[in-house]
Image (cartoon, rainbow, N blue to C red):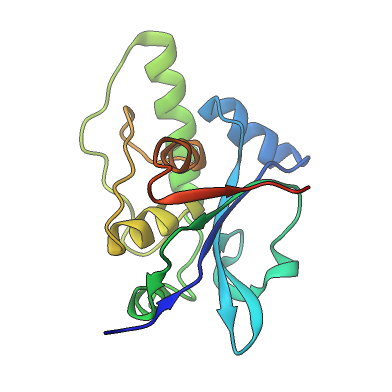
Length: 169
């Protein structure tokens, strides 16, 4: 049996124009999401961010933290290793623009696009965490065609059997 690894899902809501724009287009409370776990005794984060998918010490990713959740029973280390395959993947700038336009068209015109494919060569933060959660057996539900940080956040809220919200005291 493999040892379970402590993992947190961290959500931020920055003050930058880009963060505010993401929240406006997605009608969300959060604009960024990443996975945090210990590596050789240090808390590290894997995130898809401007510049690409990276592994950094957590303090470099933890800015404007809005919410954080711990996966209650941890995850198998192999799931984290599989997520590492995405390191160096470019950030999906085009996908962010597609989300903006699709969400805008959908809300204004009730226009719905079916089966939008993600870029196989680029990721957004919510896609990276979505793929990670699939790997550990958690499905992210969305009424929309593209997964946003808000969709991942709502999944964490809706699944108290899997996620424990951590609150600062």
